[in-house]
Image (tube, rainbow, N blue to C red; front, side):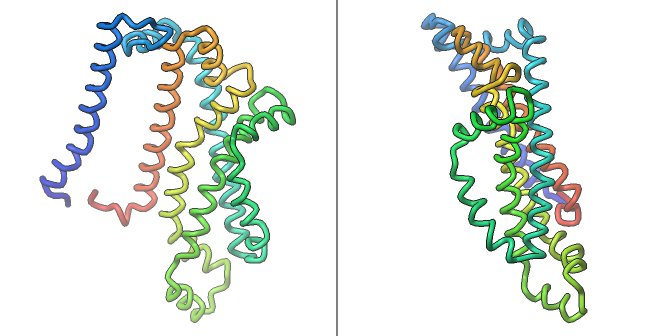
Length: 258
């Protein structure tokens, strides 16, 4: 059980950044209003908040599209990373052949991949989903594979002495002990999912928060640009929080008492 001091410290960890954030918003509001800065240069936080009521229907429609693309791309990236990571563990030769290529592929800028996907697959949701997959896939894969490789060799040798085959070793040892590393990869990828979808929409699309941003930017409606950006941040935070909850449920034996 946690002591009162630990609970107090945890509360402070939330209160301090919250107070700092509120202070920044208030200072921002004061500077914009007191200096009468035009909205097309820097909108006040109050003007940004108004967008969520005045343009709610439009924002909701675009946000749901981006949310759908991000969720689907994220789920597919998890399934793909688990499948390829498992294959690499069972067949090390495949890892030697393709792992370096996958590493190099992550050095290609997103801004160069998205237009190609749009040319190949059109302007609908498919290229955006693929963009999210390619962005989220590697962090999940590399953490999953590293988690299996960093297992104590004594455990591996113990399973060998019990004549456990590769499948049993994977199911009962490697997979459970690599879960923490896997969740680390999931959290990293969760922060990329909505950004990847938005960038893909920005570079080519007819609907989505990225398209909403482009149209708002062209009309110098920076309050709408900020509002859509806030939605991307909120969605990403919800993703990360959901993964943290799932991690604690899955690894409840480790987080028992927290």
